Length: 260
Image (cartoon, rainbow, N blue to C red; front, side, top):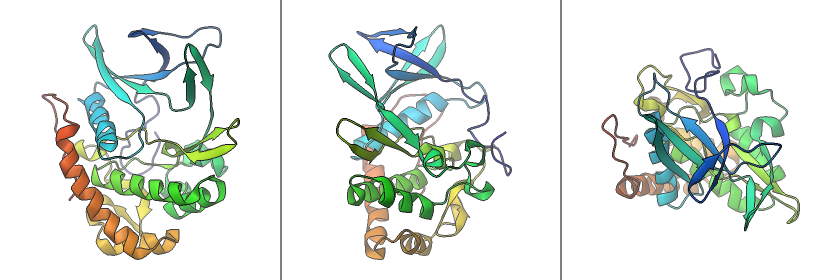
């Protein structure tokens, strides 16, 4: 079990992930080292509706202008699944080329087993410092990381740990950029999952206890301007409320609401 306090969604074996190739609407399993184009994530029986939960969170991020991996839902033999476009691929015609990806734990030489801050994993301060050090466009990627942190908070994704943020290295272009958002789930929807955030916001772990002063403290820790952070939180909150209709997914089990 990953996480010592409460239950986390990212438990070992909680959700199978299959690398697949999608072309002309057909899904196949790549063989003999052929590159995949998507990740297929089937439903989790004990987290009902999680496929549609993640799909809506991801589509909501795109709807409000954040960079996020493309997703689509499907069903085969009565099993729901999520198809996630691989952002670490460059596709030209029929050619699929792999791009190098490195998550923040890897970049900080932190073992994946301690990806949560409370167990020795990266803090948000560490993450912002890493972007300044690695990114080819730090000003843009610092803004994108800030937006990602705020968005995860607003949609109740308490499982945004160090392995859920990555860099993409394009060696031909000689660039290193923050990867699009991925693995965003409203974990707050499930009462059995921990309300403790994977990384503190301004010294606070409990998602229900975060106040404006905690975002101001985050700004100070991350070396960001406090007025920028104070302004960006309500801006994204309003965008989320407006974008919910654009990212609507019909499913009888659940409806995402934002922490506003």
